[in-house]
Length: 316
Image (cartoon, rainbow, N blue to C red; front, side, top):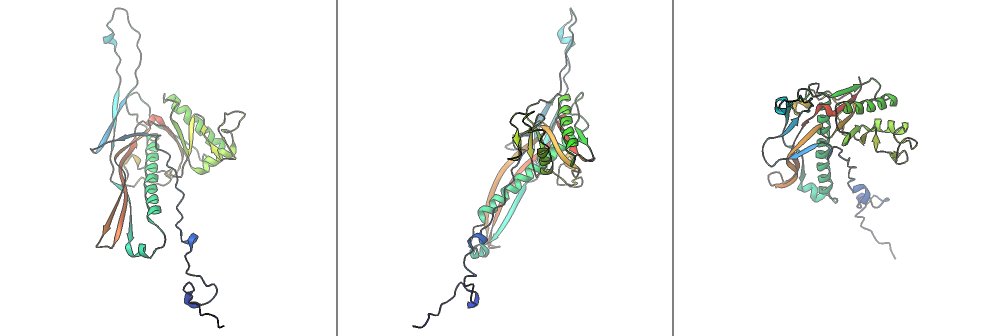
């Protein structure tokens, strides 16, 4: 019996082995969703949601002092004066991550792109929110002028080797904690944001995870370090690292040169975020373009609040 003539529909031009070049490539054809970097500033700065308007006010109350009461005098005549001020955070332009999908491309595709695209759109916005929050915290540390008379400005700790010399980095962290103490900043809700290189530098050094001197504070086996001094340690890849001094898309206070920034330590009151339009997804079929426009967006504002509550660690 003669052999059958096989119609090699999976074989490019019946060219022979391999016979399945155009078969569905399950693994190669899948879209690998990018590992979503966690945002690190949510819950670690002041946040406010408004339903309308262009800005939100954050009142600032200065420090009180004491008096020694003089016998026979009216207390009201000796009442102390508490200075106050305000910080106003304005809503910035809508930030969006738009994607356009052609219907012919979708029809030809054997894999789903909408779900992973939506994930990446949302993540892009989340990471930008994180970056602008960190810019605001660093901006606080760069403010030499206090918010109110008698208050304190921010601080910058600089060294030419703070990014590579673990001893200098550790000294900078302790100095940052001391600065916040001297500014009467509460010891709770303090966070230290580090770039990965400096995080692992501290982890390898081991001072903050050494069981002889610390409670259970992580370990090299899990690459975990929870606290350093009295800061909660957070590793982030969203630290601003370029010169933004000429970026007119940013609020004036955030137009700084971040190229030397190594880390920033702050209390939650150092910066704030105001949300007018929360994270939203919209989809529209555009008949004139024969495709779907997918938009993720939000409208927020970011700025510093208390300069005395932030310390930047930077290269000199």
